[in-house]
Length: 205
Image (cartoon, rainbow, N blue to C red; front, side, top):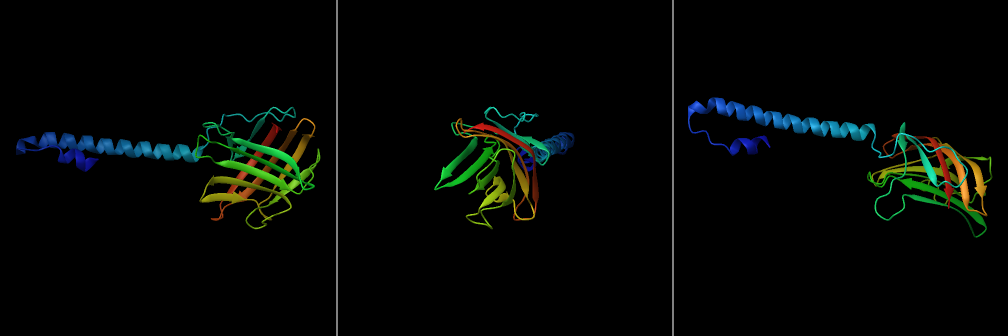
């Protein structure tokens, strides 16, 4: 930017020193302004990279189709872009065993996703289930696990050290409603931990 601005001006005499100084000063100001703008953009993204509102949904058990949590202290809610749903939730019986999945994404901000599940577990109201499995270490696991997907190079999983809990507050199979609360810690390949807190969901699947 600076070089382009300066090269587009010709100085035909030594009497243009004042003009040259003004142009150089203007160029410096433009460069500094651009740097400041980039710096503020990066800070804002790091401070709160999500587009969610400031408030989590209440902990209900009515099939209100709400879900949310805190991700490293910031409110994280699903947001939709296009026709794809930002939430994937089901509890189903497959070959005599129950599988539960809850995943929700902020599709307006690079699709980061909070995801947790239980495999081969028959859920019960009032019970708390440990989230300490993952598809990397445990493969076709039995139990519960959580994950936070930020991008393809930054995926965090629960494990035997970084764990969490899922509590079921309503399970209505006749009306396909499942509600509960959750929290978990998850770690990525670089050893960085993401904290998922104050999670709640109330879904008509």
